[in-house]
Amino acid sequence: ILNDLIRAEKMSVVSHLAASISHEVRNPLTVSRGFIQMALQDSKDDQSQQYYLDTAIREIDHATDIINDYLTFAKPATEQHTVLHINDEITHSVKVLQPLANMNNVQISVKNHLHDEAMLKAERKQFQQCLINIFKNGIEAMSEGGTLTITLSEQLRGCTIVVEDEGYGMTEEEVNRLGEPYFSTKEKGTGLGLMVSYSIIKAIGGSIKVFSSKNQGTRFEITLPVHRK
Ligand code: ADP
Ligand code: MG
Image (tube, rainbow, N blue to C red; front, side):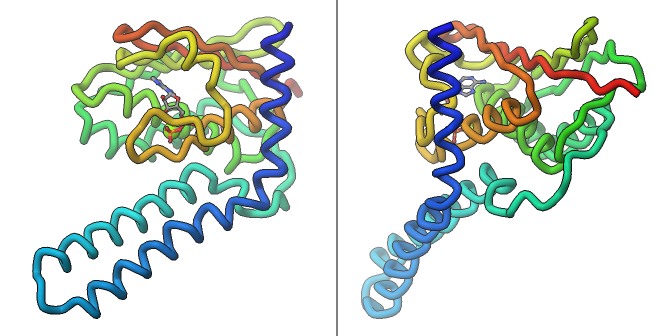
């Protein structure tokens, strides 16, 4: 129960964060502009010019990462919750991440035990973003390759999406910090991906559990209410 309270607390931060996200993107862009300007001024030295431009590119990439993780919150939520086929949204999200998976030598295996009509009431773009952020972390955790297994199943009261990777895993302390804004152990991480996913799952009325062990892998269990006609 305590964990649930802490999680709910973390999630309420999201709405406040929406306002500050433009600031988060502006920062690396400002730094990037500064380095490009220095490259223009400091024209005698090839090596420092290279350094200025490399840094500028890295900062621009960071701004892009923030936007990619946060996309759904950058836009006002005008779209109403619609009835989605869970299968289709999984398929779409896997397709989006296939190039990244190929780059990391990761196989994505979807095991589908859902009825075809298994549906969910949610905002499509948000639900896709939620899945993409979780799948992406799993792929990124397996830089040496492996399998990302996504298992869909249906119970009486809802459905479950289990996302398992064979990656570097987390310590208990790291697991407890998941969903906290800006928590990242990655060199180029944003620490926004899971915060976004958690808040979307909450908005849909679902819940999420995480099991992980260091150097073994990680398992996310997402339980969602199913919409029935
Ligand atoms: P980012 O991916 O930008 O670091 P996230 O919010 O997506 O931010 O994830 C936060 C942190 O949670 C990651 O930096 C990583 O330490 C940890 N994490 C999330 N998913 C996994 C996973 N599947 N395996 C190992 N660590 C993970
Ligand atoms: Mg991430």
